[in-house]
Image (cartoon, rainbow, N blue to C red; front, side, top):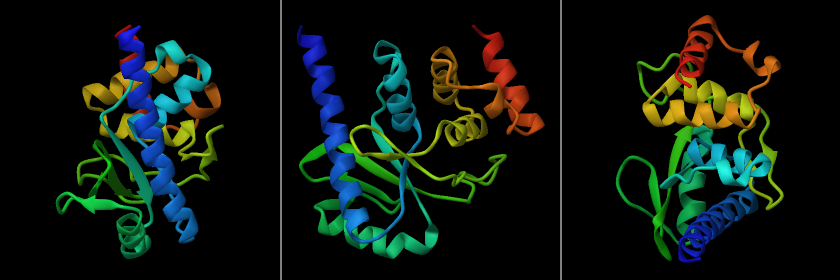
Length: 183
């Protein structure tokens, strides 16, 4: 089916981009993890591939102290900075962009919490991704409509456990309850 082929090609392109960038960072000794919507996609896919939603770009969480080394490693791997917002474009696949966010810092001043930095997990493809608990915190912190949908996806895949709920601050727990009430 044509639609499945296109979707599979897009997933393969994103995974190839992640592997190329991740390999460059690994070789440079720079810790990273995929965060954001694509990390949600990977977690949900592992449980229920039909319930996973693609995202247009890939977010990498790094330490601010590793920024210069990260930029050098990505450039050496063929990525080009697109603008000044730490967005790197895969020169072989323009639509597979990597956006850098800083661990233990707020993405925006009005965000409730900084980007968490728990130990990453590895997918079967060898991709380093944020654990579900970190993604739940991030998605409830940014709380845009697409983040709320990602929370629903994680919840529908039974990935938001009572143990994860216990890690949430009162404001984030209220947001989780609000998302659940919209089902």
